[in-house]
Structure formats: structure tokens, C-alpha cells
Image 1 (tube, helix red, strand yellow):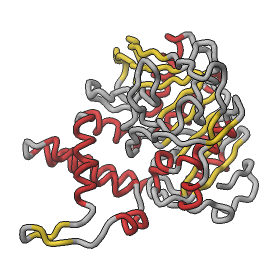
Image 2 (tube, one colour):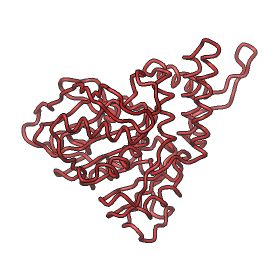
Image 3 (cartoon, one colour):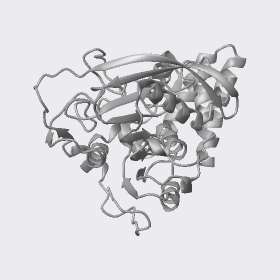
Length: 368
């Protein structure tokens, strides 16, 4: 991991943790605060709002949120990839593991005993909004939720993948309400090569619909997406050679890809996937308009968000800016898999207590 202020010379290939060193380091934990078994407060809700969408005009929408921690604490907003939702970490009222269980929870990098953690279901995630959705629309939706909750200002916005794109939009559009942004594996634009990958994924869904098998098309799209998120190095270490099964060649990774596709289909509608996938490709924010502190986290092995784009973003941001560069065989999914490296960055940016070490269930980690 390398840290540097904006405009300082940055060598992304020096002092970078290997995947083995990153995964073996102890994960920063916060020491217990207050009673050792103090329950973590949490609530969920829905908000009816009228939003003017960038490409679709005025729409009446329902926004769904979840908040962990006491209302009087400083507030952090947390957002992930297009498959992420409002349930980022478990609590007493909502005990199932969240999508970022490795980072959100008592004693973890983002501790609800030190900060109130707020997250939403993405606008369009339920498939009911079949229009073009811009990342700027998501930023406005977040602002509407904060208004409804009486939250005037965020101590921080932590966004990963699509969530980082939305975080940059929020910083540009609602910067007066934000102290600091951490943008992990997401930048100011969608790279044309990654957009071409996503266009083919959407065509797979369309082809499935033509064959009256939309879910199969959606599963295939997800499998293609997984291949763009991960790396050849991971697959070489994880999977074996092909074999012949019932007279046909079966690639060793096919069972894994089938599992990823089936899991995604069970949780996502084709409309939601199509519109949120399109939304990534609509990302366009002017970095010069952002004048607050930003930590940009990039992964050398990320084929969706190239390191060069992270460098370009850092050079154009106008506030205090830091760049953290990681290596990971998990590529774009490093924010879900490199628990120690990501936790170290978050703990540094959002201190609130002393830290200890420990182990825990990493939860239900979805690919971006």
C-alpha cells in the first residue's frame, strides 16, 4: 500500500503488499467501547421522494435505507457495487451478515459504536424504475435520504466500485455536506474497455429474453462480469485442468461460475441489472469540481478500473488528496477480499478508538 499527497511522485510498484502478505496481516480491530455486550442500534425504513433524474425527468420513487449506530454519532455513508444493498453489517435487530461484514461492525474498521453507518438500496435496485439512471441521480437520492433522516452533514462517504463513482458525484454535487470521501476501485469515468465488457453482458440478457429465458441470460451476464472482476492469476491458482464429462469438455471453473450466476439471478431482476449496469457507463464527473479531502484506493490488478485512471483522477482533484495502491489477485473485487489492507486504510481515515486484533466471519461478500 502506498500513500501520497496529491501531486507527489507516486511509484505504484514500490512498497506494495503482495496478496499473501496482505491476507496474512492481522485485521485492525477497535477495542471495546463501553459495556462489552452493548447492543448495536439499527433501523430500516422507506422514504417517498420526488427526484429529477438526469435522463428521465421527474420521478416519484421509494428509497430504502438502513442505519447502524446511535443517531447522535458522526455519520458515515457506505456504498458498494451494483449488487450491494443497504445491509452492510449485522446488528441485533438484523442479525444476518451484511455484504461488508468484514469492515462494518463492533470492533471492526467501521464501528457503529463510534460512527452511525447509513446505506441505501440503489435507486432502481428493485427493478421498478425502467429508465436510464445516472450515478448523479444516486447521489441526489442519498441527499434525499439524509434530509429525511435529519442528517445535515457526513463525516465520511466510503464508496467501493459503483459506490465510489456515486461518492464522487456526491462530493461534486453535495460537497458542502461531506467532510471526506474514500473512493475504492471507482473513478470519475467508465473506462471504454470496461464499458465494452458491460455492453456484452447486457446483450447476453437481451439474447436470453429473445429465447424466452431471461434468467439464463442474466446468469451468463453475471458470469462474464465475474471474469472481468477477477484475474488470471487467481484462476490459475484456484482451478485445475479441464476434464471430459459425459462426452463433453467441462472447464474446472464452470461450477464456480454457475454458482455465481445462480446466486445473482436469485437476488436481482434483469431490469435492475440492465439499468444499474448502464448507470456505471454513464459516469462522468469533473474532478476539478471536488475540493474536499479524497482518498483514492486503486488496485494494480484491476482490469475494470485501470490504475492510470486513478492517477488521472488524483491529479485533477482540487482538495487534499491521497492515493493508496494495492496489489491483489482478486482484481476489482479486492475491496471485498483484501480484508486487512482495506481495513488499514479505513482505520487511518476514520479513527475513533484504539485498535486490537481478532478474527471474525467475513459475511456474505458479493462481487461488485
